[in-house]
Image (tube, rainbow, N blue to C red; front, side, top):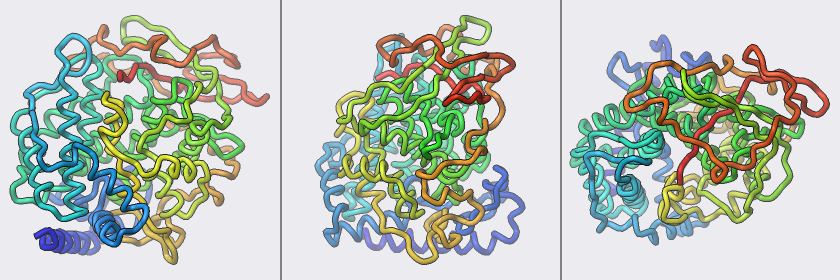
Length: 534
């Protein structure tokens, strides 16, 4: 039965890819064009959403080719897939006896009975069972995943709480969409009802955050807040074949005013080819969370023919290498950075991070296999720190393997199983639905090229140029459920030590003048606040 289902999915994927090829001649604009780049070859896209068609499915974190690879490698007992699958089958969430406990309203944050742990445990159970079904073919796991997802789409109506409700929407929104993507072709899955839940419960909360930032100064919230929202909106857009949502995230990634946009999250590219991760000035846990979320956004986009991994001379590669080296205990530079924080029309202030926070070399999250395999295997680039830290973290587990609190469920995980891949040879592989069509160097046509040595070579002046428009104050309109007194706060227990400005020479006219290595550069304010509660 599993093999029959796989053949049915493969035929649908082939027809969809064929349609995308035939329709490519008539496409006036696409996601990549809207973002100012040529559409990558191999993008498994049919006609635009205006014509009622959409994206390649499955096509969030995993394509059909990815799922087939996992199944074949595990069946053959190949390393390290077998070890990765063993971690999945050992997880209590991956058992077919899991019974969901759906809630009408999910609360996260102070001021209400918090029950969001029920949601994230059920979401991870749905994802793990769905993934296990695709690997070993046991339909009992597909049945379990569908039952969990159907139960939540039949009952959940709202997400409430403090500012942490935005984290709940973003994290569990992108995760539940990924779980559903793996069973969307099942006849017993309530696809339309699930779409309604995504577009009325999860995505609007994340979209509100990206627009108004909870009525806060746009830099009040740290990088990971934006990235959770971006992941949710992107996953919703792809799952629901909504091009407008996908375009919105791509444009925000490249030019957004908040700290989740790539040049604000990674503000300075060093002469050593590493790029400073802003949230390294906060603490290690949140920096790892941000890297994992940016990788998630890049991977989902890649599977639809959109190359964010390679954007701005592979800026994300340089930032991920920086965090990997730092997390391994290596010395890294950090340029003092001041951020404005506060509410629109309310309290205001600023804080400065002057150095990278201390690290615990034993701290890990299941984020590295996906990123390392993209750059070293798909693109054939050198990424020594990513390679080392991915090997150290292997075999990666998932939710439930990294502690009982919410931080242990921020990533879906199981990257050793899901993202280990053979190195691309010959013509390379392009972005988009696993359909190929690269430029011959592992990059999709139209994508920005990486430095020849990956992240190890120095970047030119353009790599250090400020990107996008200078972050300004957010809209004065308060998002639903939000008010100026509902901002997530930062405190001594949540942040690395913040000190008076070091190297800050002026803050005026929206430009932060900072002194670095004896040179004065102009950088936009790239700072943001808010605590990601654990």
